Image 1 (cartoon, rainbow over the protein chains, first blue to last red):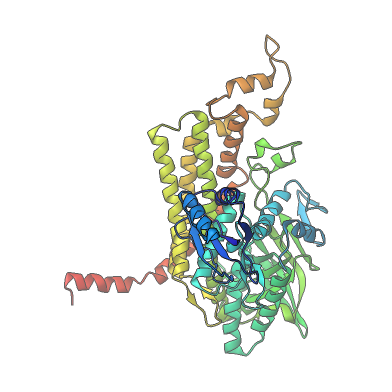
Image 2 (image 1 turned 45 degrees about the horizontal axis):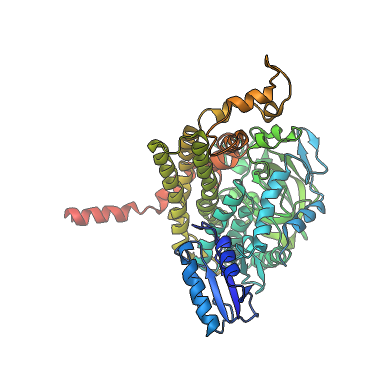
Length: 89
Length: 491
């Protein structure tokens, strides 16, 4: 499964978004994570916001499946579970 | 095409910008130890645009070309764009703890775009097309442009044409078929040396007598007849000390201001955006100032974030972090800082489209934003100094801490004594960590970064009284009186 990743701009993140992503990526090594780019379709998209606004733009991307959003480090486990389920489906 | 940070620095080396400092011409200004930290600061605006963790704020699609550009070269297309501008500035402030200089150009682009549209509408001139072509080039090459507004002004009681010396405001000295010759100077120019081009604008509203001073144009920073004299900053010569690091507080980044002189500079017609349309000088100034007052609700907040963090670390390194008054002071600093951010976001959210189509901030809220910026950083600095303690201004130099000169009865060196007596909370840091954080607090409160964080907060984008005039104009006192009458039952 190819999963796009899109970070918000990081103006005032309440946690380390990069570290959160690395943790998700390390624990889900079967998923091919790529930085989201226009013109490069992905199966699913992970949007990593730094605060509750989770204001990252992502409408421009070609996503075949679901868009998963997180904006708190407490969301990491939940996101991993959802991505695992999606991968198994 | 986006440039990388390294490409930006190399692009500066291609310029022949004339720079003077301490009475001498500086040929290799790119690598000069006093100037380089300010270049590093601008470089961050390029580096962050390449980083997936930040590019959502740092880059955007150009409405002119459809290409991805750096947001610092963008024309705001929505209130969302206006908010993203403030967020980007907070981010850049956090990453540099200094002035990253590129916002003056962005604010000039947006003010110039809408004002030239309206000049052309009234006078049938060609300024808007000139400006759009210029901006396309800037976006395409990912250039840094200084938005130069503030004139020396001479006797503040006199208008430009009444001054004893006619050059105290930038003016059209000569009109030719193919362009104009301009003369004068701009002061306090943030990032002028680090800019590829300049946009020059009038500094105030002008009556007809001053029409030769109602001039706006673009020129390369190394155009014939133009040069810069570098502005001094507190503690600047520390940067010239051999191996200087800890004593600088912020060894990587810094701000930059300069006097920019136009000694009869020729401007071709294609780069002229206003040449005598005095009735639009006020509009251009008001719009540029409005954007720039919004900017301060982002950039100074980012620097404030760093200072709050430094104060919290200083408390921890002193072993005082559990004291209730320390916690309360950190809360107060955060409250003040986030209030500034609220203002930046608010004036953006209430923005509106101009006739030309780009978005303008809410003028009242932007002026309230900047008015708060003239005050709150001073209180944040006061609290930081309170928390840090006097050591931030009394500590011996980095050289003393490293000195192996034996001075003790048992052969101890000066370095040994410094290490022994300046130890803090040994569970949280070593002596060098304490040194570093004290010097960072010093740098921001009264060292070279205080130029940007304190006095620039006071006077940048207009001194406090300029905002109060705008607040008075925009404040709708008559409407408020009507409200009071209605409630009080006064017919």
